[in-house]
Amino acid sequence: MISAENPDAERPKEKKPVKILLAEDDTEDQELFIDALDEAQIASEVTTVENGQELLDTLRDESQSDPDIIFIDVNMPVKGGKKALEEIKKDDDLRGIPTVMLSTWDHPADIEDAFAKGADLYVQKPNSFNAFVLLLKKVFLLHWAKALLGPVRNLFFVSEKNVGKG
Image (cartoon, rainbow, N blue to C red):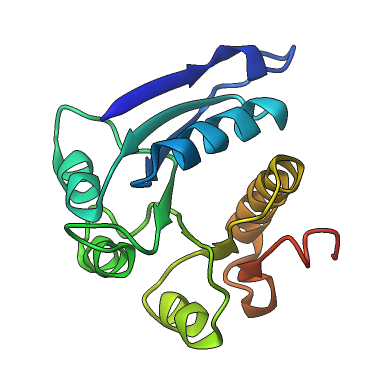
């Protein structure tokens, strides 16, 4: 597990950083995610884990505080993202933490399955750094909007193709 703080991304108003738990087995994708957060100027503290089992172990570790939001790669070794999501949403202590699924795929059955299992958003990983920055901005905009509005099915899937819409 690695941790990365993003202090340079703080805005002048000294907003409290968003505590993010990222479950991603690819270290290059972890670095890309953290760099994109920085570029998007999202004040954050990111903790990374490399599989679904590490994710659950970290969430259940009482010495760790709960994250504000969890990003989960769908395809990981040991325990995949969908199984980890399912366990998180069945756990009374964890189910309220917002979860965003990350995948290179945009297959409708996978998206529907993630929605049915309780994910808050499903994000298709973009092909470029700039698109990743825009996607993260939209994810955080949608995350806070969803907190006010409740689940909105037509805002569930976010990809490079629809990042400029609505």
